[in-house]
Length: 479
Image 1: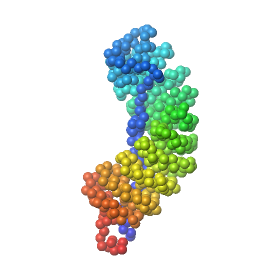
Image 2 (image 1 turned 60 degrees about the horizontal axis):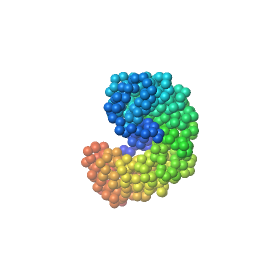
Image 3 (image 1 turned 180 degrees about the horizontal axis):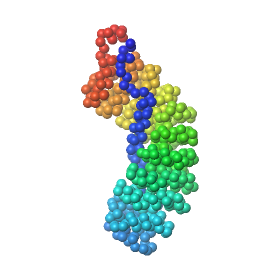
Image 4 (image 1 turned 45 degrees about the vertical axis):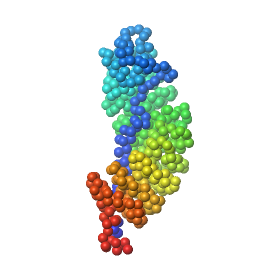
């Protein structure tokens, strides 16, 4: 028996790794979305002067005046929604007045169109406040907001969809309430609106309500959202704000893998790839649009290998992905590596990814921050999992030299990935042992033998005993 076969392979197969990775990323990437694009947004008036000197006492006084009939109410509502957009302290001041929210909801449901619209705007900005603010709005105003999604007033539709988007972005409790109230169908229907602002606000709301719930996402798909999306997948500047919102919708629809076949059927994969190819030529890069498109592509390519091949029907995609790896925007590099790690599961695509200049660009990222380094390691491990030929190619291209320093890391995930690559390099590549010895890899493994994580310590010990601490018989075998 070859001595390499004695070693217990602790590396999971490609499908298991990709499945595990999908489950982890569904959670982690949703949590990190807020760092790129706020889940809750105040709405500001265009070219409208804002009274930045307003005090909480003034907010309390005008809130009391709001409960008195008269022409002053419209101006008061405008002042309040401006104040709400300046900080939650002003929202707290509003709530400190008895019956303030009850009266505001009364104006929302009243017959005066101007007051109704301003009340909806106030509610939108309150919804962008704290969890307590959003929950109060959800319980008192959400049913009316949902009803007005089907009104004949496009400005009111826009405002109510925005408010619902803020409520959905607050958390699971608000999302569950909105879903139970039947928010999905009217929101999806608004994607057919001839008014761009309405479409944008609707897509914003849909993307927020789709988070963290496959049940709600399933309802969104069953309501017919996917056939409505292709028309908005255009790089035209006038449609860019809608494109960004719709791309986030696609990110959440594609996250579980349940709807991938439908997405591909309606041409979403092809359109996303084409968009990424076109957007790479823009300077500066539009990170708010590219990021969700990358995530959608990565999600789709984490499914059956045929989708990675289909993505390559556009002959420029891999070259374009290599261009994105040179971006100065960190999260674009990270998302690109995420896409490549999934596409690398397909053998033919993997060969292209392992070629130059792509391979050097991937390897270069091993010297960057933790999150990017981790994504680069996933790509390289997925390439190596294809067997001896690919692993030998990586070692010959000097990849192992860049992996060994990672064994000094204090992060368990990075160490696991680094050890996984080293195991494959040692098991499948004759030069692996010599490279490890030459670049101080043995010393790094010895340092891990006493790691506080028993699993890591065991893996390092196995590598040392199997490939470096050989008895006389094994030395003779090698000779």
